[in-house]
Length: 176
Ligand code: IMP
Ligand code: MG
Image 1 (cartoon, rainbow, N blue to C red):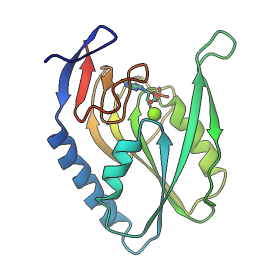
Image 2 (image 1 turned 90 degrees about the horizontal axis):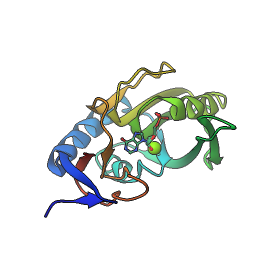
Image 3 (image 1 turned 90 degrees about the vertical axis):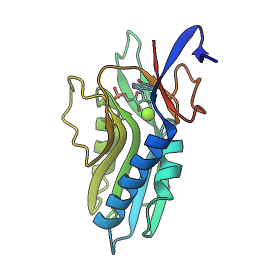
């Protein structure tokens, strides 16, 4: 049966099997790159939680995990202002930090989170994103690990949402 959310048709974009393979490859690379180090993963809620769960289980070194949440208020008063709305529990100073995000679009969200983390002086800082939209970025964010490069599509599934729906879909879809 064809899937829809709020009357919008969903078109299959990346199958769960292909995502699984990609996530395993990312995990192997991260395992190699951080060998002998104690890694602290910081995942950006909510969209990254399914990606994080699979990625963590494909990393074969010691890791700790913490979560951060940012909110962007797109109204007339503060256009696109991003605020960090949840504090980290684990101290970051001198830690090797890998930020895990579902999707990078303008980079506005990650820019604010990155500055917050860097101000706490980690030993190293890298970003891993499952999806990169590669649009005109207002900020230069460099991604060390990327699952898939996508262009100008609105995606849903595998943790990402369309108006909070669709996070539970195992495959990734585009909204038609
Ligand atoms: P940015 O601040 O423009 O980079 O937006 C990044 C955040 O917006 C992502 O972490 C997602 O939560 C959300 N987002 C952007 N594009 C999409 C999409 O196509 N599907 C679902 N969420 C999206
Ligand atoms: Mg997100």
